[in-house]
Length: 479
Image 1 (cartoon, one colour):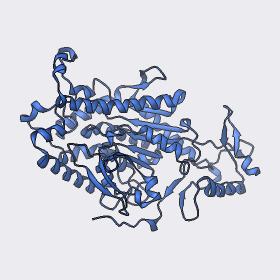
Image 2 (cartoon, helix red, strand yellow):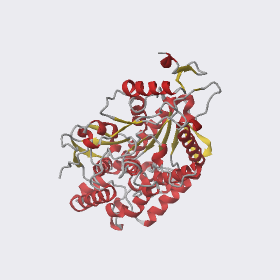
Image 3 (cartoon, rainbow, N blue to C red):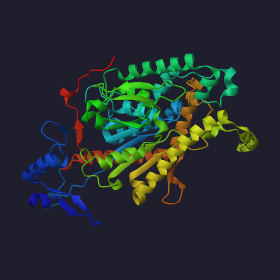
Image 4 (cartoon, rainbow, N blue to C red):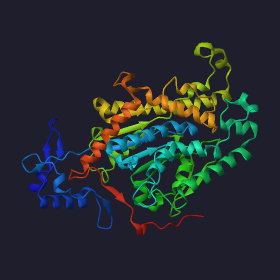
């Protein structure tokens, strides 16, 4: 009981914070209590828990005791869905810059994004990037670098996207769904693009990797037509039961299945007991940041000491707002009101889709910022391309795989990194920050490296990830 009482000390705010004596016996007692009671596991489960640190790495307070803070759980969230497609090059370049910053600040040339984030969530192309960054073939290191994310779109986008012909330029404002219905393009266009997409996914992940084959927890949503409800693919659920474990390439196909451009995908779980007919995750969750935060706050098995948002560090990446390219503009950038009044359902389809997707993402950003309150500047960061850079993109920016469009998007990404960061203000809308997006990323890279280093000196683990048991992985996939 004495050891248990010493685990709690009062911090300057009067709140209770975990602490532990450096005595070896106290540490062993804590470890037993931790694994048996805090996490609810029996001897048949595996936990990835930090070992006791070497004596040389322990910083004492002079009295032979350590005040071990909880640390911060680090979350990465990547927007997508709503037909983002090629526009995913923008967050891909951000990820590439961040990974290089982590390598520079840590002194480790092989450092990866997944080394410093405890959980990642992504929708649409953002879900695909999440899978790339956290997928592993050897149960140890991630299979891809951050640079591989945007290069996938630049190099392979033309395999499953078709640049609109000049003859159809008059209908460029018509979204894929309406082009397929009114122009009879479904049989040739959608089926071919879907097959090409599936081949690209299989080439990337193979057919054996599943949600369990990720180095850290991931969340990737889609909309399930079978149940008429959103479905979030989760590594934590997959480790609990094969009924929630799906092949990784199919998960990415589902979250990226933009209606009208790619066919829905019918999926079976590893044990063939769960059926999902998945379409675009952006229909339900274009910005998955709130879902990621909720998952951490309620997952006490893997994140035992998280009490609230003050124990989180969140980086949210947007894909750039391109809605301005969808409405008619007159000279001077003013909207042509007369043309807008004459628009019907077909003309409004693309703007509505983009307004809905971008609006939902912005709403989540603002709500999350309010939830963080006064600690938002230190615990929550949003990186998003804003006008005028994103507004220069053409109407078909999302589905144009040409080298010219790729160049435009790369330029937008570079300009976005140099833009002043825009942040939500508590009950006050938005304001332009003093720092650029690049400076913000450099700052958070430093914080991530510092958090990573501090964990080696903590006895109580900040995270305790569930690990897959080899005997549960059957590899019995449906044909």
